[in-house]
Each structure stands twice: as structure tokens, then as C-alpha cells.
Image (tube, rainbow over all chains, first blue to last red; front, side, top):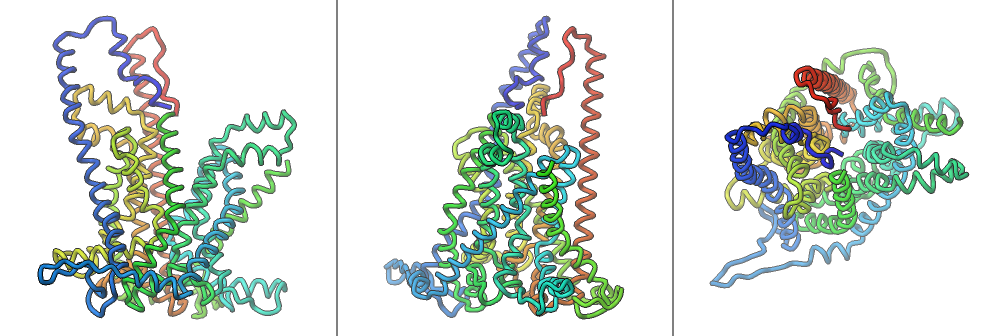
Length: 333
Length: 293
């Protein structure tokens, strides 16, 4: 919106009827030239530093994970065999696909992957069903109410994730507050077994990731042109019909962004299943951690990580693409 | 109207869902009974016993140090990255840089944690640094995963920033570095501050990545809490959680008030500047309106 209009600062100079003294103009020209020469250098420094950091601490590590997933476990520190060996002028490269084959053979891994996908997908759906009306209500609230309401959504996200998950233990326990409450109401006769089950994992994930769903939804719903809904109403559409054919399609970018922001981390979730889940709530994040720490099998843990990454590559690419499109749209305005 | 009422009911329910657990946690931290879920009268004994828990206190101190260090590093790097994405237009590889900057946001933490650990182990093998795992490795890991959050916050603030102010400063002869520190930074300060705060709380809260990259000598607070929760729920953790929630809420409130005041101050300055400009320059055309924000 700003970029499109000519820079106001340039206006007075151009509009001044009296020409500026030539020396001043020359000086300005020189400085502009200087700026253009200086700027690229400053810019490249500003670009290079964070990019170098991310290459070293984010991209290179993936290469190492891939490398170690192809090596053999060993009882040593670090507990894996080197990939390359140099002996008698022969460089040997040993690629061990055993870790991946092992994952295919043992059904534990397939079950954990499928279970993670199922839990993440259903939790995402529940977040959407709860988050959409909330985001809609906030976007349609009186303008002075929107910021405080949004703040209320964000605030739990700032308080400790671990503590918020912990809070549910006291609620969901056998003798916990929820069971006490339901018994007192007379809804149930015997306490429900919720903690250490898949249900508790669902509750934990929906609870922890709900803000991630609401924020992008709010961002798209708030920008929605209300006159479109009026037009739909004028043309005879019932509110529900107008919602399905106007509001919902226009808020689709928010739906996609929010869903991916919940789905992707939920697939690899580790804290929630280990604190709230029981043996039936097997998730790939916990499997990876157990391979790494309890079994000390770093190569298999790496293979599990690579497989998880492959599973998430498509959703992550969709998310990145979506973000890129949004940024481009913002830059154009 | 019937529909809005239904909507506000869901909104109220959603907020109850978000806040009741935290509220219960706080209430039960004042419970005299050791049984976390049975009310046995008001007491502050768990706060007292918390103060005597040397292990938790030293873990908290370590975590605060790591959080402050890593948030500062992440803010410097993230602000740079945010500027690159918001301002430097279309340069070669922009899409790759953008993807690289935002990828840590969505990467599952178990993958980030494992890959960073393997990097540190390989580096130690190769060049002997970092020696073992501890505060250094945790700090480096936290800078890496939190800088993306700072970058996104700074980028969105800069995208809505009037570029002409910076251009004016440059036309007046200010060097780019000076323009940044005198013009840009004060304007984007609220975004930078909230980026720092977010990085700080994310670092203070991180379990998964710390679990991978921490060593036997350095156990940060979340790991300490995590392992004690797995052993069972104790009111002491409730007390600790209440303190954390209280501190974070106070911090957020202070930051919110500060940035609201900044915003008001900015508006007043702009208004004054416009009035001043109108008095000084008797131009026929009316003074230009504020940019359409």
C-alpha cells in the first residue's frame, strides 16, 4: 500500500520551482552514487551472516543426520561407524541401508508413523472446528475488542508449553478434577480412564496448538471484505449459503496455514505423548527419542528422523509456498 | 440476531478451555494437601519448599542465562534476516533464503534436536569444539530455532514501514548503518523487543531440543521439570508453574503497555511534525496526509 505511491520525501524537492544550487545537486548526486556503492556491501553482510548461521546450524546438520542414518551402530563414542575409511591407499565408502530395512521389517515403526499421522490429522481437524468459530467471532467483534481478544488467544502461547501440558495431568487423572466434577454432577458412576490414553494426547495437542490455528485464521477473516457478504445477501443467499460460498473459500489460505502449523509439529510431538499418553498412544517422536537415548542407537534414530522428514516434506513445502505467495501479495500492495 | 450469540458462546467456551487449566494449576499451588487434586486448605508451604530446592534453583538460573544469551543472539540474527526478507527486494536466491529462514518454524523439534546434536558431536570430532555438551551447545541450538520467530516478527513490521523515511535520511547524507540505528531501529523497536521476548520465553520453555543437546553437567529448568513430572505430580511444581506464569504475564503486560505507549508517542510526534510543517511552510496545497496504514 505504501510502496505503490511515490515516496513523499522526494516530492518537495521535485516540486520546488527554484532549482537547487548546482553544488548541492552535485553533492547529492555524489552521495547517491556513494550510497549505491556502499549499500550492496552492507546488504551482503546483513544477508550473509544469518544465512551462514542457518547453513551451519540448520542445513548442514541434516546432511549429517542423513550420513549417520547410513552408518552402522557401534559401541563407541560417538556410537556409530565412520562412513568413509582410508586404509592402504584405498578410500572405502560403506553405505549401510540396514537401518532403513530394519524400520521396514519391524512393524513398530510403521505403526508409530501411521498413529502419529492419524493423531495429528484428527487433532488438526478438532483445532479447526474449535478455532474457526473463535477466529470468526474475534474478527467480527467490535474493533476495540479485537486486540484484547487476540491478546487472550496469544497469552497462553507465551506461558510455558510444558506447564500447560502439566496442568492437564491434575485434571485428567483417575482421581483428578474432571472425574471429581463429573462424579459430582452424576454424569458418570465410576471415574473415567483418560490420562495415559490416546484421548489425553488429543486433548493435549488441541489445547497446546489451538492458538496456532486461530491466528492465521483471524488474519484472513479480518481482511475479508464485508460488502461481499452483503452482496450475497442482496442476491438472496441465506447466511449459511453465503458463508459456504463466500467466507469459507476466501479464508482458505488461513485454513491451510493454520492446519499446517498444527499438523506439522503435531506429527513429531514428543512432550505431549510422553506426559499424557499411554502405551497405546505410540508416536514417532517418542520412538525417535527412545532409539536415541534408551537404546543409544544413533543410526536408527537418524533413519527415523529422515523418514519423518520425508513424510513432512510435502506439507512443509505447501506451507512455504503459501507463505511465499502471501509475502509476494503483501509486497505488491 | 441468533448467529453472533452462538459464535460468542463458542468463543467463551474456547477461552474457558484455554484458561481453566492454568487457573486450576495456580489455585492448587496454594493447596495444603500433598495430594495435588484434593483441597486441604490454603497454604504457601510449597513456595517455601521450592526456595529450599537447590537443584531446581540452579537449573532455573542456568535457564535464565541461556535464555538471555540466546534471545539476544537470535534477535540480532533474526532482525538481519527479517530485514533481508522485507527490504532487499528480489535478489538471486531470495526464495531459498526465505525458505531457509522460515523452515525452523515448522520443523519438528525432535528432528532439529537430533540434527544439532549430531552436528555438535561431529564438530567436536573434527575440530575439538564444542567440548562436550552443556550451556554453549544449548545456547547455540536455541539461537538457531528461535531466530526464525524474530525474523518473521521483524519482517512483518518492516513490511508496513514507510520506506520513504529511510530514503529521506539517506538523501540527507546518512550512511546506511546510521540510517538503521537512528531511523529504522527506533521505529521497529517494538517488533524487535517482542521478538526478543518471544525468543526468551521459547528458550526458557524448550524441552525437546535441550533434551538432545544438554549434557550431564548442565540441566536446564524445563528438563528438570520434565523429569520430575514423569516421576509424579507434586505441588512444588505447581508453585513453580505459578511463579513462571506470573512472571510471564507480568512481562507480557509490561511489554504491551510499553509498545502501546510507544505507538501513542509516535502518533503524537507525527501529528506535531505535520502541524509544525504546516506552520513553517506556507504551501498552497494542504499538507500531505499520513500514509494509509
